[in-house]
Image (cartoon, rainbow, N blue to C red; front, side, top):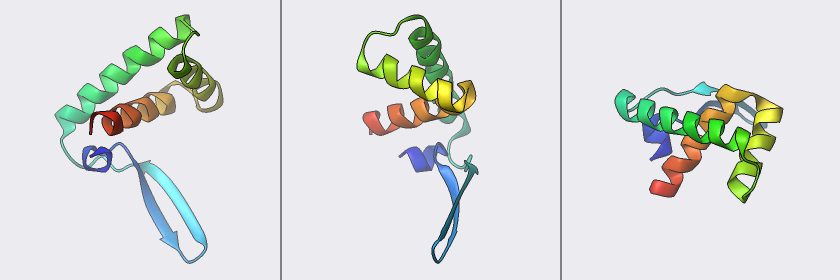
Length: 83
């Protein structure tokens, strides 16, 4: 489901080499946009509130990867939970 929405990285693999690229952006653009907007709200709320496992995971990921990649990761996680 997450792959159908375009929330997973594009892969270009050959032999032992595995390269992960940007989001695939295939699938329903409107539904993907809704997932991204919902994920942005989750990331903003998690920034102000650090209790709970999900909030801690979001904050740690945001420190390592930045706001936009964290937003896509949360949207991907929400899509997998819904499926």
